[in-house]
Length: 571
Image (cartoon, rainbow, N blue to C red; front, top):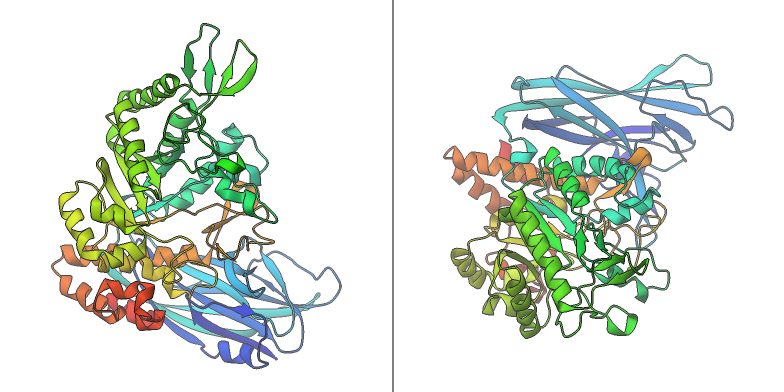
């Protein structure tokens, strides 16, 4: 028996030990009511399964037959009178750390082979443009079936309604939510086997920056020295992946002894980001708090300098590559960067980033050295120790505490916020367990992330991952599971043709960001009370400190797991 049904956009299918009736149970709903604003979208999932027979599920109109002979072919078609662009994608499964397969990747494949008793989810999204007329519309999800050269027969018809509201959300590049997902561009190049910073590499980055721009991304990652993260310490892994990141700035030491710095690749990347609306910030990595692992070869190489900055150059006279080891040569490079940003008129956007400094006094020395070299730079720190919040660090403009610090030091953080001239965001990484964006995380938690920024009076959210894939992410995403849960490293996957494959977690985060934008719209319209009511409905804690592990509270005790509680914001 075939089963067809609908689920909300936060449905997450797990293929492991599945009861016989799961196909029927999960597909029980035959109608959904959807809602969105203009320049917004509404999404849901359609589920298809068979108790006894394998089948092919297709989302296109191309002719298709089974490669092994006769097989049932099911075609999905979506009809609606709504003034929307309709997107239909097959949802692929990714193996989690526990070896179960879970919904995550949105596939570009036009069909999928589905074995018996396995549910195949479909992602269906209705995109309403700025000019879409407000109103309520109807729609149908039709499933046609045939085998070989039989005529198709309509086997099942499901229905939905879509109400488009009268408000217009901002264009993503105008979002007020400050999103900072770090880019690891050398890793992208490796997945497509193209040379770093080649024309082919930039063509691929164009697609990836587009996907970031659609989330409202604000910052462009610029790595200006070698290995600021020590290859994410891949040397500790039994099966290491190549996670190395290298400088975007080629340097040549002329025969005259002078250094020449080529900023053309850096400039090209900045311009490419601006094309996609990513123009708020240029975040510079590799100048302060560079990670060190002396025994493994990742130590400091500049003589008598307190940081591990590693700057590579080509020596024309020697005909070989070398590294800067003299403080004066390092200072000349840093000052050339500073001068270039000033000449381009970008300095107000530049933030030199410190990633999780650990030793307060040592970090102060590192900051002092760099500030003496280049006093025009402004700084941003991802902080995972509360000491840095309590004491403060001279020169830091933007504070980005990890969620546990933000929650545990909330009053102190609000005091810092009132005095600081920069932004205040929070981040999650391999910790905390909740909320987070792992494959194993409850689907609603990706949506919670922007809501929590509003609740904590933060400007936005930072995460280290977008494309920090292990070597073969579609085959084996799980990597270093004792430290990084599957999904910790990415929001997208490397797709064919140089284009990223989006994930459900990307879409769920996008929904939360759009919720945040709608909240700001309501507040500007004098409807802040509706926003406050929504926050009280979604969040169950009295004080942010309860978000920390010390409270002993479960995720369900901290925020709602019911999408309808969030959707009431739009009612």
